[in-house]
Length: 115
Image (tube, rainbow, N blue to C red; front, top):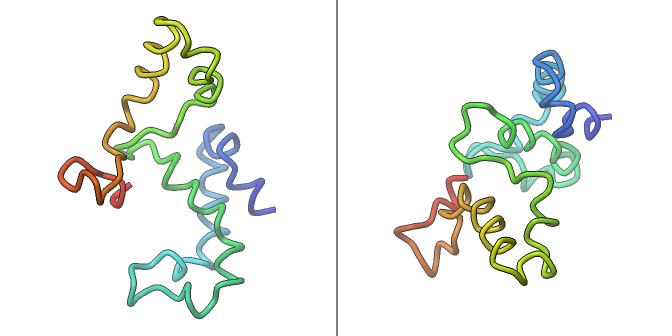
């Protein structure tokens, strides 16, 4: 049930759906705490069941990074990027996540850990 209630499609459909997901996810709030505040290590199985709650942050309209478009895989497919127009479309679609580079390789440019 939690995976349906907290699905991307459901959360983006209306605010009531978002409220319902937030209510369900309150039970696993300690799973997403920061290090000392997190209960994830002691409750691996329980916390795993709250994984769909991560979609709340990903679909937050106030988030600084956009969720990947649903047609990203098709737009950036091998066949599509074989021509200049396809490469351009893929590059433009990927631009919002350009800061999500490897933090070890590009520590000053990376927003990977924050997002």
